[in-house]
Image 1: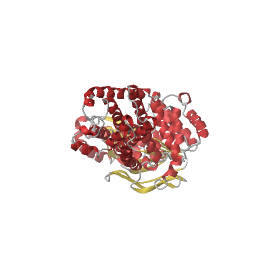
Image 2: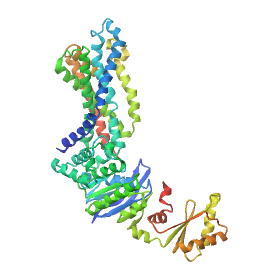
Image 3: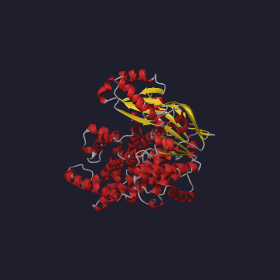
Image 4: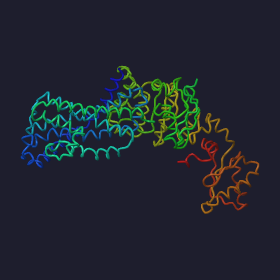
Length: 255
Length: 321
């Protein structure tokens, strides 16, 4: 029981801070708008090319953007924990009998929840710009499920880095180093049919790609069960590994 | 009865940095115990081990009869920890901060609400309870920080440098709170590198240097071991490079004098322990001048913990920083 109590109070501690910063909501709306406008203008002509899987680029890119934002923003979520470490708040909390697992899981879960809300906002913006979600409400739930797994993966990784190094540098370095390559070795911006063979090979190793590939049909056509299966399994395994790493690192925190 | 007992408690960081070296400590229930030492002496590491934040490399410790490693979760229920840093969440209100720590101690909600009000009164923050902590002054934050460590009525409170960086008025006020808490029956272990703080508050003091305890006892006992007064003499700056030679010469001359108890070198000169400082200064100066030993300045000090520190470590506590 104390696990659930501690998990809830850890979540609430973070949610309250988020709610006090309405600017956050504003920025999470502005940023996707800018991306959507920029990319749909920049890549407009690509959708005219033979073999492009969608009617227009906006429809193709919107699901990609949801995945991309999930990766970009979750990669930096460890900063929240770093602030608690630097302020001495985490030490003080660890002197209480709080359940250690609830503490780290609650923090990662909060970051993931923020992403899910951000994904909903992007879906709403895309909808207003004329993108219908082909699979409707159940599709949205599945999209949010996949986004959550990506969120758990990258915020797990981000937290593990902060816990081990107690510094912001590794997050910045790793996030800068891996996020863009992860985007370009997936079909976030360009259909895989347009990519050279060696990049297609890399795509098969990239968990982000499995997520995009599963989310996109939900947006523009119908349920693709094979892609949905791997869209949950691959990010799911990745999320499991990353969160486990964070939990294990946290158990050794302080030594 | 001892609420804290440690046996050869040792912490080595990264296999080479000896932070705490075989510490044997006994803290009696109900007392204020001061751990006095310069920065880097091992005070914070000692507290981190006792509060279960970090595991000892070897040796062990008991708090309230529970082993600090094997029974860490039991230890956490009876201790409160006030950290050197801010330790409170700036984007939450004072009340929310207290509630959070209360929830983490699994206190029943109805009891907790009352307890929060009680404790806000104790630290005089009731009127500011619903303001965000980032609008608090430094002293208010510190009071709230101490309050969060008290929410579950701990038997033992750890205060790591409780008045570090606070102005003198706030410091005096924090001292009053600490004494008030102690009167209510809470045992307190505090670390400090302020001598007057250890002297004023503590029933017992341990002086710690390089991870060892070099002296332990009541402030009065420790000071009474220093017989008489201390005279600090400094050599003029132009002869500083020869000060070792000068010190040896001075030592040879002065140790023959009947009223000199002992002499020790210091960073810029020496200190001379005598029975009566006021009478000794003119005599000392006259003798030293006759022997061509120039003295730049003299300071007379009555026995203080600083002299105790000096006696055991050969340094002034401030010089180490």
